[in-house]
View 1: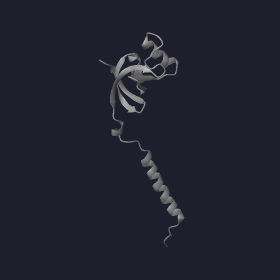
View 2: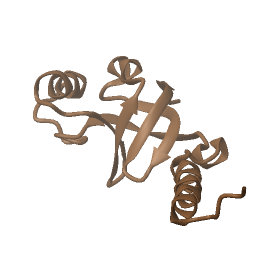
View 3: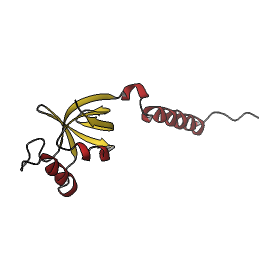
View 4: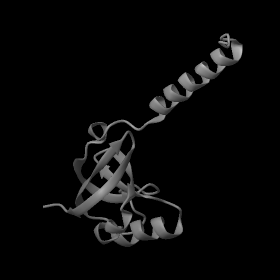
Length: 118
């Protein structure tokens, strides 16, 4: 004897379809959407930017990052990008002009590599 399709069968089908849609909707965008780019600027911090309180900009940047809850930042003119990711690469470049490669996300930059700029 065949079982009639009732509301339970329809509800179960709707739940499966909803789960499939949500899985698709929250899946990260393909790697092409997260293309790496290289920017050149001064390695500063989110507290002082590039206007440091003392003449030793390197020491000021490191002090702000380690003791004042600031983040490393790439300063390009009037624009500032908070740097995240491989930030250990940034301490030797603090206060200097640097080339930083990574993924740009509005006002932040996920660092994959950094080197002194020419």
